[in-house]
Amino acid sequence: MALPTRSAEEKLRQIASLMDIVINDTSIPKNVRKAVSEAREKLLGNEELIQKTSSAVYALDEVSNDINMPAHARTQIWTILSALESIRE
Image (cartoon, rainbow, N blue to C red; front, side):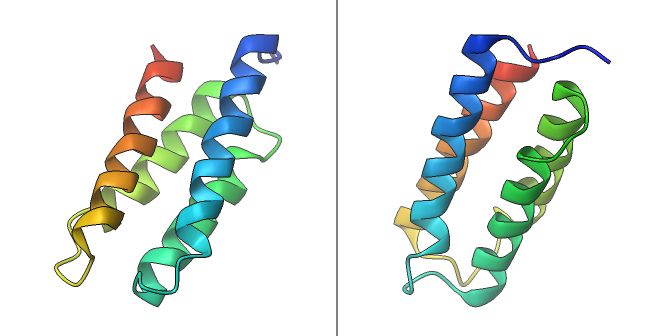
């Protein structure tokens, strides 16, 4: 199993902190916060880097089109997705 590089670990921590902002924002619907929380758990799990990021992207992509999500939350989700995609490449 390949270990993530130091820069990848730092990016994962930064993304997790972005996720924390969304999780703690009570203006965001509960189902969206739950999905972000689950994606964060997957991201910080023990799988390989590509598997962790892919699982998190999948979970966030599903919820990113929720019609009840405020515009600022959608932008935050897209920022997180973009950061995750940059790690996968």
